[in-house]
Image (cartoon, rainbow over all chains, first blue to last red; front, side, top):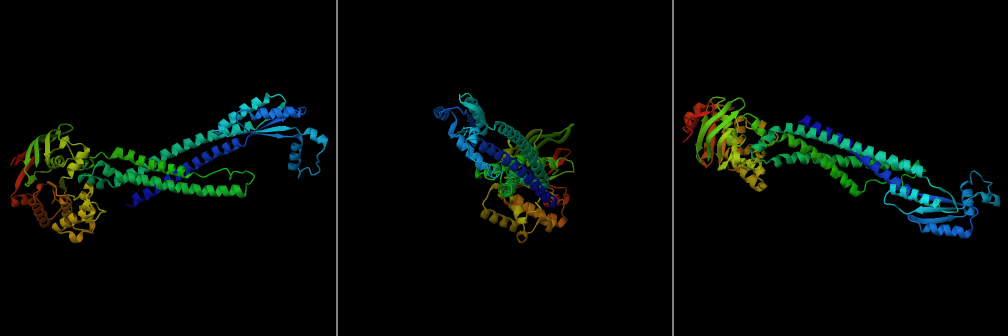
Length: 296
Length: 221
């Protein structure tokens, strides 16, 4: 009896660990996607204008950009505003920097183009690259800049990470099935006599299987709840560290824990893993003739 | 109630456990099955309680042909019969009451009905006062009476008992046989396999003798 109980407890703990790693992986994957989405949303294309452009030409370019596809906002930044922003940002480093005509001639006028939200981060990147190439073709725009490389690398990293996490999740799910299955197998062996007696008095195969399925499903759900609780705790700690100690990286504002729907889905998967493990095990063992194997 | 015709059971390498068995036991009849070890008594009982199928021939119990039943029907068939074994087969972690209640639980009866029926049958077998005890804390005779109570609580048409007194002393054996005769008197067909020739001779009931897989006496009443 005790051995069976210890086996059940250890099965539960190992399953909870597997589910915690799985849930953490899903959470990381979810927030990586959000991060790139957030980054994509805030992406701007900056088009630097030729100094020699007349005000009318500048207005025409702004008007033309506003009509382009995927453009949400077009903001014209004059040489003067550009320089003022530079001065205010560099105030601590260059306190003596003042506005004068010579300096003003160095600062370029620019147009900041903000994109509309795309359905997904990758689409944002495609839109940006396409739009940048279109803007480059406009006469009067000397140079176009946007941080595509970093985002594309980040996007690739996100994809690779997601694939790795999904593979890990799959392996852990299989491991959980095997672990729970082993526990159910032991439980069946332990209750073999009881199963035989139940068969003897007319219990249907479903009646005999039901308690094992329920037990394994319960192990799955409880392990899932424990995993989500641990994840929530870790998530709160990480968010706190980012919001109090690593403030320059504004991660804490842009990451979220699972939604209620996600949590329910995770618990459903956890229960499914448990039930499937028991089902596979029972299918192999209980053939409804257990009592016949004993000599009566 | 129990009818076997042309029943053969052959295992691998031409081992014939049963050979051309013809048997008919009527409703409310009390019949003993005797024979040496390995004669085929257990095989015959397995077939009657649907734990095994004949290689050929037909086994008909309580109006149902065993070989025609699927898994679910077999389960339902077993609810119509009662089986008692030499080793009692009680669930150790359940009380006497819970053990006896099992067939009714399996049938899906209501708690109030279960309590009433189990109490009545425990009273009949003289174990009502021990209903909260666990099997390991009662005597062998009481365990066998519990097994009989479990076998009759759902009022089966047929009660099959395989060496029910095999592990009991002579006095307890007589008690168990008295109990089985009482069950028979209420309309249940009782078929008992035993080695105990003394009991068989003293009770003067119909006796079927089996030897080397064949019935040598008493097959057809």
